Length: 245
Ligand code: ATP
Image 1 (tube, rainbow, N blue to C red):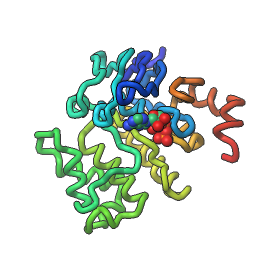
Image 2 (image 1 turned 90 degrees about the vertical axis):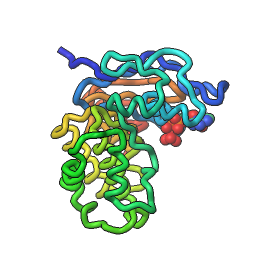
Image 3 (image 1 turned 90 degrees about the horizontal axis):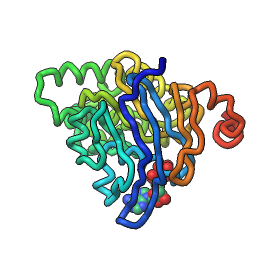
């Protein structure tokens, strides 16, 4: 039997600035403990979909105007981002968004801002176990390489002890070798920590190999979906998204 969905996006429409319709009825499901990927060209609405889930849409004057988002059976549509973080969903934004004039450890502590428990120092060590090279960087985060900043952004998300991480283009700006490394770590975090993931990617090859199920978006709609094997062997996928890969 199919695993139960922890996150359900049910036919949502999203409007920016009260007039610009960007999502035209998006539905998707993410089962507990799995990696689901959302693919599609620039401007299709992938980031908007993640922001509609995390509540960050609000900070850009966007709003879900139809449909709903439920997480663990609870309606979270248009709830504020802090509330959604407390419920266990953490978004790693595109372009990393680490604080450049803070150290690695200070950035990691920021990820734990909603926590009141005493396990924070232990979790910093856990993040360093996944990303050993971050441990060696003692200066300001602004001096980290692009790949290291991406690792720090993921580590910061882990510090919130989330049930689910939304990842927006973790491969962006990284060399092929680093993309591989980052994806391997993402997969081990999913496996070992049991964190459910929704992954937005331009790099369809990497994303499809990491996921169990995928959706393809174009112009604010889902145009194709299927499990990894179905998508990897789909003719349109091969022609438009996997060419050369
Ligand atoms: P990319 O990979 O380029 O980020 P995407 O699939 O993630 O593409 P979105 O960033 O979600 O696409 O953008 C979808 C559409 O919404 C685009 O046409 C974009 O111009 C528009 N859009 C995004 N953010 C805003 C905003 N804050 N206000 C108005 N329109 C926006």
